[in-house]
Image (cartoon, rainbow, N blue to C red; front, side, top):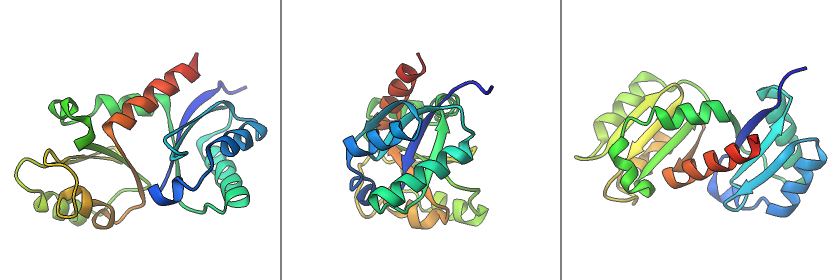
Length: 181
């Protein structure tokens, strides 16, 4: 029997994710056999424990979300170990001093190298951009507005992704660690 894995579930699209009702989502995930279910920030994220493989977790949760809540956007499942590696790999350690200006985006696939180069070239002085193992890190010390790299990232990367600010990245790690015990 496979050991239980703690999965961090990322729902794509802030607008769509916040339409997922927190209590009913938790209840439906628990009814589907997921353990240690928790949600964070208006159901844009969830923590579940399961013996299922990643693909089966995503498929089951996507089915619940579509059937029960009409939510049909991308859903990513990242194991606690992968999430810890994401935090460890942060290429902008000085940026954590103001974590709201640091994003981590989990990519659904490999971006085209020319799109990565284009985004990197468009970074303003002081902005940082790195892609490491299907995670993009974006540092925008001037904040987020319609003119900066973070605003251009979603369409410019050309791959479905789920971006979270560093405060959320750290909170999800904390919740996942608690669920692992």
